[in-house]
Image (cartoon, rainbow, N blue to C red; front, side, top):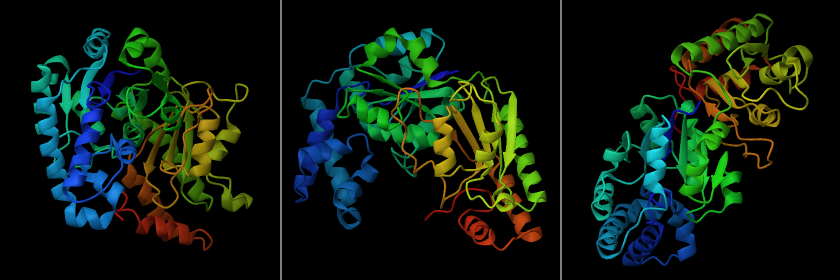
Length: 402
């Protein structure tokens, strides 16, 4: 069940995208760079700490990035002072109705606290007075499409990301939501159309906030088809099952990767472990083994099915999960070289949705299984893969920075 609704700011709640484009163009011109309007429009929604590199490259970022961002901030402050600024249609009503429906509401923006204060002064409102929490971009964080500010908003609300949905107008909102494990609701009030938002993984696409507000309950139900409390106890219990499957595989000489399927209420359906060595089939991953053993309801699994794996699923397994209708994917250890989260494109067919993916759950234990496998099993054909996996992850199970 969705319990928290997060909102992007620019282009979603407030009509400021045009000001962002214009002031970035002014900043580029002030430093002697000729950049087209359409090029900047494509980047709106990406944070300023990343935008310069994306548009002009690493060398310009190193030499002029700070000056460009300072020029943009100055131009944006002037634009806010000189131009009328309006909330998007039904913005306040949507926030009000969401809270009345029992949802906790938060702002999740890559804007700086200073820019937010200027905007609030211009609008004559304070978002902290109409929302439960406000999360802005801070030093030491990475802006959208990184998940930092989305995860910060979820944490502030006291909710697991799997219980939250983000409303946004850009592809960078979509990617931040995907990386955080949050459902994404796209609105076409920005520079991105409905098809692009669906292709980015939106579970729901609306024309504006009024369209979201009038069918809020229906849209929230589409964002989460499970009936599970994703609290630490439930997450640990699910990972216990996958870890047990991984250990069973290791006892048979397989790489220690286990997977388990649960129904929408969190009841265990079936488990599987890697069997590539025993069968000689490279496709016999733990997740594929579980799918082959699962009872089917026609083409797909029961709506709201949860897949749990000790290792981030690869492209094949994550693609298969989408194909059979898995709603949530939970995993332990990241797979920097082979993981599917950053490499699988969301489906656009009506019957399939992008799985919500939440990783890093008991990642240290999942990594320790590979350490133990290397000490006790270490079959030559699987050793290079395991060695690379261990080399690219830290002892605590997090992926090493590249």
